Image (cartoon, rainbow, N blue to C red):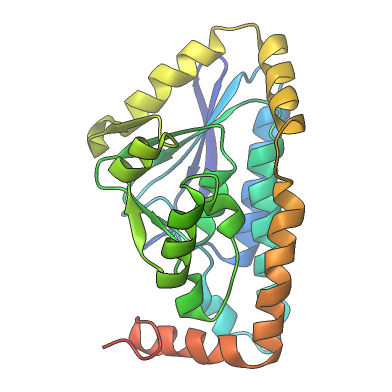
Length: 253
């Protein structure tokens, strides 16, 4: 199964994404991921969730090929709603969510990571939003939770990536380890949370969300309004078609 949940240790649920070759999730998978994360957190036996991925990278965002192969805007709407559901699920999960990021974390991956409680990353991990190169917008809300304001703007406008080491320097990544040690590092942290009174941890998660200075759901939906406008204007299709045909941003050499 592309999205699975395992429970090999008391109190710890490990949710794994596995969509070869790059973990670009089709629209239905975003909804499935949302349901899986929420179900894991709702289980009274769960004290902490680890979200991880198999393969080359953690997450490459939405499946643009699926979007461009579908007539009309249905696939776009489903992808945007699915991403919003998955991002919200990580945020609303009743217990802390630790993300273990390997390789690339781009596009929708930033939405998942930006809404997580704790981030551990492999030393080859990179984080970024190629949205402007795809004729779209979105997840600046979540990137702003990972890097300072002006760095967020620079990365967003240029579609450049930040390294795990940079995010560790900014304080958003808790720990950077070799890739083969990534799951173990996440488990060590998960065990320390699972050892706490889960009633207190669940209250702590709710309390932290309620004092959050940014309404991440409304903020993300506002970003998506501009994405819809770009699609209605035909701009987004130009950029997505170029990416599907060449694997590169429109105009890139």
